[in-house]
Image 1: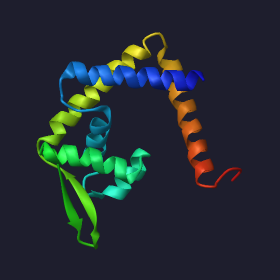
Image 2: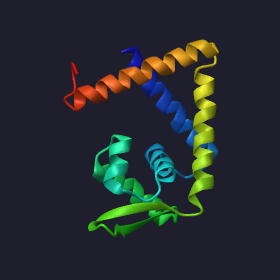
Image 3: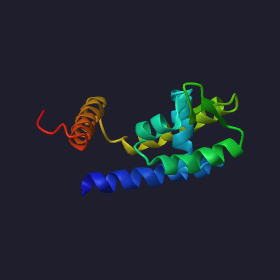
Length: 142
């Protein structure tokens, strides 16, 4: 339960940080924008997989980002049924503002932890995530 509580509290802090920064993005839109900037030219389906969201959930975020001129979707030359997503020039500065707001909140949340504890926490959470991913993909016990 403590992990779920921490995740919810951190998400609420991130939501407040986005509101305070007045970027006009929801948490989902902000996250999608950062992923598009990190993986330019990716298919929508690949971005959804990276984000661990359903493709239709991502489509809603991308619709709103595209309406604001932050991303463009184009047919994939290798498969015209698929769409690739590119950030526009306006996207990168906004993504950097999102990351800065998230960094500030993350640092505030972990202010009582030493540098060594933060490294250990990140390591343990990374291993926990990797175990759950492996389990979800049928790799339990491998």
